[in-house]
Every structure is written in C-alpha cells, then in structure tokens.
Image 1 (cartoon, rainbow, N blue to C red):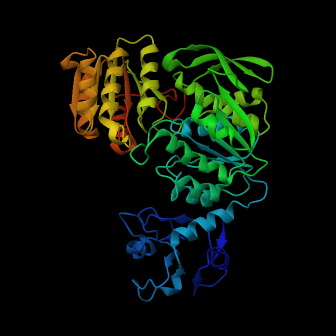
Image 2 (spheres, helix red, strand yellow):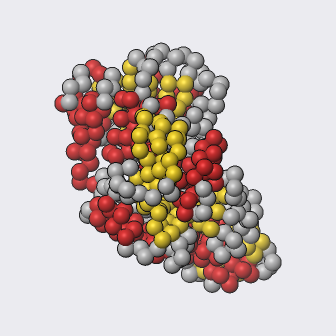
Image 3 (cartoon, rainbow, N blue to C red):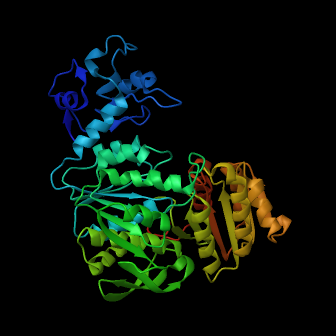
Length: 473
C-alpha cells in the first residue's frame, strides 16, 4: 500500500522536513530486514528500542524512519525522519487507513488452535473466485498485523488474516486496524494461562475481536466449543456455526479417519449432503476444514465451489505437512507450535496411521501454560505412551516431565530420550530413523523444532512428488 509523506503526516499526526510527495511502498520494524526505500518504524518494546537501530536501518537502505518527537540520536538526518508521539501508534494509524481500500472485505480468524491452518484452507478455497491475500503466520499481533496490512498488494477483494494474542487488550488493538467483516472463532483452550487466570479470561480476551466487526458482519463459530458459543451468542451479528458434536449450519458426519492419509466425511449444509475427501492429516484438522467452509459460506460462496479449492491447498511451513523419503520412512512435520490440545490431535493421527513399523515422536516443550505446565507435560507424556509411540525424544527444559509421564504410563526407560534443546535432538533423531518409521516433530515456537525437520530433509532424500514442499498432500 502506497503512502506519501504528506499522507502519513496527516494520518499519523507526524511532522517531517521531507518533501511531501515522497512515497513509500515498503514498511519495516526490523532494521535487519529492512528493504531499499522502506519506511522504518522505531518501535519500543519491553526488551528493545527501535530508536537504537535507526542508523542501521537508514544505512541498510531505508528511505526514512518514523521516530518519537525529540529524538536526536542521529545529527544531520532530520530530513529523513518523521517525528510523532509514538511510532507504534503511527504504524497502527497508517495500517487502519489502508483498511479503507474500496471493495475490500476482511476475514479475521482467532482461536487457541488451528488459526493458520484455517486461514490457509480458506484462502485456497476462495482463490478461484476472488482476489485474495493472507497474512504470514507470524504477522498476527500488534506489531505484525499492521505490517501485514500495509504490505498487502492493492486491489484485493478479500484479505484473510489470523489474529493472535497473548494478553488482554491485544485483540482489541488489532481488530481496530483490521475491522473484520467476518470474525472466525476456531476454539478456546487454556494455552495462554501464563498470562490469564482462567480459560474464561482467555475467552473474554478473544471476544475483543468482535469490537471491530460491523453490525452487518458475520460471526463463524465452533458449535462444539461452549466458550466460543457463549461469545457468539452475545455478538448480535449474523451467526454461521460449524461442528460435529452438535447441530450446526456446516456439519460433518460419517467421518473416516485415515491418519496421515487424510479423512473422508459427509458434509451437511443447507439441506444437502456431500461426501468429501480431505488431504489434511488427522481428525483435528476436520475442525479447521469446517471452519473454512463455514467462512466461505458466510462470504456468499457455495460449498461445491469451495471444495474444489482443496486441490490448490498449500500449507504454511511446518504445519500438517507429510514428507516421504526414498529411505522408506515418513515425516509428519507439525513443528511450528504446540499445546496440549493440538498435541493430542496429532498423536491420535499418529496412532491411526497404518502401514508403518514404528512411530517416533520428537516433541518440544509446550510454552505459556502457566502454573500447570509441569502437570500438562506429564499428562501429554502419558498420552504419548497410550498412542503406541515406540520412541519419544523429549526436547527442552520440561523434557523431564514429558519423559516421566511417558514412563509412568508404560514406556520402557530406553524408549525415552531427554535432550535440552532442538539442536541436541538432531543426533538421536537421525540415528534412530529407519525404513518403515513414521516420525512426528512438534513443539512450541520458541523451541525451534524446525531445526530437526531441516536436518532430516537435508540428510535424507525426500521423494520428488511435491510432498517435501508445502503441499498438503
């Protein structure tokens, strides 16, 4: 999205000595990633201050920087600076102004699990009919989402964005920028309890997204999740529900779970029933698929045309990706993030996947679980044992708890390996893998389990059929 100095000063309340007609089409908050001609925002966080990196950003090619009033750290650069009260507020104001593009509809997706997968499925489903865009998975918070809005190409009809949050008030801030026409709630679980006293408090923070939805907008809600339905019932907006356990507008029945080979189910919507084959591995991904279908219907598309888009589905990196190797084993790459609910889903998929001799699980710590984190890891270790995993490699500071839970539930001591971090997990994983194995890699973002995935795909030979890329099948 293109803004001139004059427009930025008017929208963000900034002042500048630069020529008012100078325009920017690139925006950055990271001096290491700045592009030539970018506008750099010197944002201050808890552990950093972007003003310390303004010089680096300008040296790397930024055309100008947005700084707080009174900043004088770089004498002689005033003609490349835009002064304002708060660079983060300026970034938000500019992104909110970009939202006013004529003809644009925004879909906002939030929830404890499945945000990115639902976003990817929906984008694939509607791309044949509408000009669509989507934010990258990590550009979903108070810093990332405004950047994503500013970086989107002009002329889109629908912009699909996941909206994450770690504390109360965060979704309120991003929904003021995105103002979604359709708000999607996938589920609500206790995955941020380090910052919240209860699941109910998490639900209240998730409900902040409704503040940006217009009266004529729609809410897409998981009928099987009581916390979601409590939010949806009070929204006052048009409601489209999805689910399995309860009656829903978009419902699945007759589900056949084929593990990593996908699933089949009867889709019931608008009095019709369609048999659907999904390439997505695991029953837990059925919830994401139904959420995407319900959202497409809320946007006015028909189920049949939405399902055709599954052929074009590409998953974001390290999510629900199946890679098969010439050496005769398969990788279930879900390394991007983890929490007890999500891990339970992929473990169930592991157990239901036929045709493998052994099942290996390389599992990193689950973060932001609060005071119950040790117990949660023990319970997940027990779930690993119950799912018939033959070898567990537990990764991170909480590996001992995961390992203890697995052993208490019956896994042999030598079938459980504990390592301190993802780099240390590489060697035992590489040495353990053999033909006929199915290897699951999963962990919270901060544990960087993609390190293990990268080494597996580097040391062994992925089959040249697209499975080693981001394709879902």
